[in-house]
Amino acid sequence: MNATLRQGPAPVPPAAGGLRVCHIIDTLKYGGAERQFVSILNAMPVAKKFAVVLRDQGQPGFAAQLAPEITLRRSFMRVRSSPWQIWRLARWLRRQRIDVVHTHMFWPSLYGTLAARLAGVPVVVTTDHGIGAWKRPRHHWLDGQLIGRAADLRFCVSGHIARMLHERCGVPARKLQLVVNGTEVPEPVSVGERPVVRIGTLGRMVWQKDFRTLIEAAALLRDWGLPFELCLLGDGPQRAELETLVRQRGLGGQVSMPGFQSDVDGWLRRFDIFALSSVEEGQPVSLLEAMARGLAVAATRVGAIPATLRDGQEGLLVRPGSAAELAEALGRLCTDADLRRRLGEAARERVLREFSSEALARRYLAVYARLYARRGGGDAFPASARTEQG
Image (cartoon, rainbow, N blue to C red; front, side, top):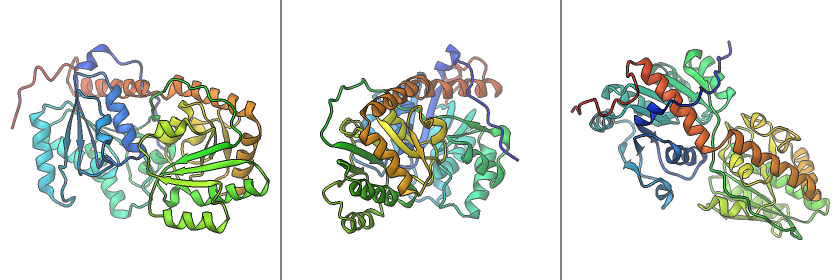
């Protein structure tokens, strides 16, 4: 049985702006889910916004990207296994008179939904940003029996994630809703022709991103005599292995790996092409950022990528794990400036229409208001009428 995925609701009613909304995440490491966490909160037009980071980890300065009106609370979970931490979080939520708790990813959803219910928060929702290949049967049970019951609604950034939650974890289809990611859309920057085409990518150096295949594709481009540079932004457990592969393929002159970089948009401006070689994805935030920058994209057909980037319209799609197909797509883009320009412009226009942070924030807010009204909250101006407890 497939999960029934409902589309986004109608435009948000004005009264929803009176809600007090708290988003909860594990850390502020510079990943896709974390960038969504920041951009959604920044764009959300509500009375009061709170950000809770369960563990005080992450890149220095990332928290500074939160808008100044957002109240940030850190380090509730020093030890994940301590039930006392859930009670502390519940007590804080009650004191802040939170109307909506919105959690991101597995551990924040487990602790955040339980704390929200203990605190009597009217609306509790989660966003699942990936399938969580690391999960064991006990995690799937917790996903279905605890998070699935405590949450009013589970947002999923791809149909694959929703089907997994329904079929493997037992989350009812009525509690699953497909939602797209969003990104800020920068002003376009005119870049002249370069003598060497610059290909870039961004992500953690883990097996899911399959940077090995991208490096093998780069070796083919080199063998075909195409002038290019490839930049792999990010860090992770596979970095040393990937550096060794670059040396083995003799790509030291074409491939650079500058590590983690916080100024994503600044780096995207340096690229002509964005490459995505993942074998497992939800809806990659890095893809949306590249599209918003107007880059031509070659990506694999996994997760929600084909629904985001249509083959031949906003980019080129290839089979995951195929260095030959990826090299062929990148080669087309390297040798055809008109194709790069046409695909990049179409990609940017699609992000403006469908995937902006503002549009996503309004979709979420419309759901908050509907769920709050269903709980008996009336006109979604509850905070001023409720008395502080605890």
